[in-house]
Image (cartoon, rainbow, N blue to C red; front, side, top):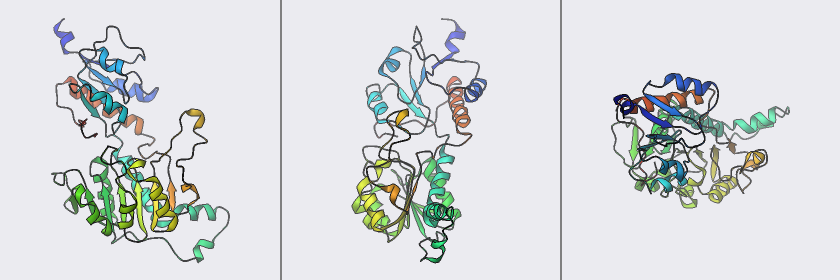
Length: 332
């Protein structure tokens, strides 16, 4: 092997986006990064880095030189976590390129839920002004308290936005400490959840899905919230128990919700126009804002994804320590 070959970082990316994002990605790569895009495994398989969200066992085990898996989005799919537990020698990293978009969607859902934007829009499109003359169910956020579950890249942005609205902000993260904590935000550990919920006028879920967070917010937790509290979920649907959430919204115990993540997803392309997001009739409730898991998307999100991926690969090619390391044991 020549010195030049030793310096080349070999990358296998079997499912890149087409068109302009891919061209931008290729232009952004360091010259020492050699990348293959073929959906079939290269032969011989000598890549150092694999870029795949849900890699196959064959892709993981084909190259004896593989030392890093990059998931090209935030989060760790459970199927990937199970596979990578068998290969602890391979580092797993992901991308946080869409944290700004997700945080902005959380804020949009919070405001839409608090101000009942959707039912007012739908009725006024039909010439119906009746909501203007009925008892007002919209809520003022200034001076109220927001609790963010999760205080990573997204949660910290959401916290800053809520502070900008004049809200008091609390947060829960796995470890309460951390230099990146905002001075105005009180940060707590998971054991404080039940003590904080009675103070939370708005509960904003920004958590990854793990064995510990699945079903973390259930009937008992929702009942601890103040009357007519707001709930926003941009994490994963099953972090909040489905039936408990529906019943709290239908009864009015929970004031309103903005939901970008769900309990049922289309199984294939043919089902995309005929799959309800839940077995419960959330779509019939006027105090729910529904979004089809698009919080992390924007017109620029693919370019941002490719820029972030290129930066990660360039750092690896230069021998730098890579950010966004995923702890397989805890799931994020």
